[in-house]
Length: 247
Image (cartoon, rainbow, N blue to C red):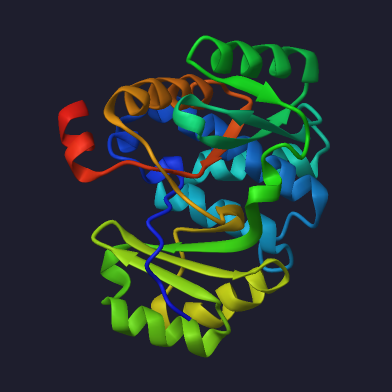
């Protein structure tokens, strides 16, 4: 069990914390509502809802917003969203997986295709990209949860498969079916996680040069600005030197 992958979800990329909070809250509310509709509206009995609430709290989303999102689901109000995954190729040969929650798949596919095409990429067929990723569980903790050794030992004891620690925080990877069991086992040791979700982990990484990186980040930002897009996963790696040049 080693932990040296530099893969990061776009939400942890430099500058992502400066995204408009209203857009972020909209996405978090949507996930909470969907999670509550798919299971019980009680987070203690619904692991996906519990993870969604924890993610919202980690972004300082007001309690009233969280309660409203759950109430919508329990009363059967609001739109009925479906989960749709798109696969794409970006600048520099990067592979991307775009996860969406939508109430209008025609609108969503048009917006996703346009954002990708305008920024040096193209939409692929289902399965064209995902074969190069592993479907796993991902649990995120802030750096303050403990040093790398403490988190590694806790994760090992809880049954995780891999850990990546950096100054930005800790990524704990689990088998797909073990996500919520591992997350529950970690709480007494590390506290509540910032997030716990199913994720797409690249099997290999692609080092992206400066020109392609600038275009790639524009593409990801365009996707991330779409209300229907929940998460963008990629197999890109950008060196610190390139990141500094990009500002």
